[in-house]
Image (cartoon, rainbow, N blue to C red):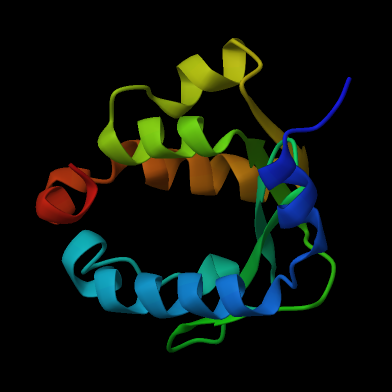
Length: 133
């Protein structure tokens, strides 16, 4: 199977800039999306959101005050297509549906993955509606 040109290019790009951008975006959205969530369950743990195909992604942790990019190996990996991540954000698909259709894979620390999956499922993404519509 030949990869599309953008996938070959994406596989060559460094992951640090998108990881820092994702951490900054989550820090901006955190008060709006999860005002009561302390994220203490994520301190010292690393989550990776990986795009299937180019096998590139972002790895994040929480330092007790904010999300930060990480270069360390992830404790838990979420793997889906870019389109499916957008479906999740728009709530046009829920994590359980994607998981059972094998369009979302969760690897590594299952407990951590389920905690995140439940948080994503309970998130009112409409609070960011102008951004993700």
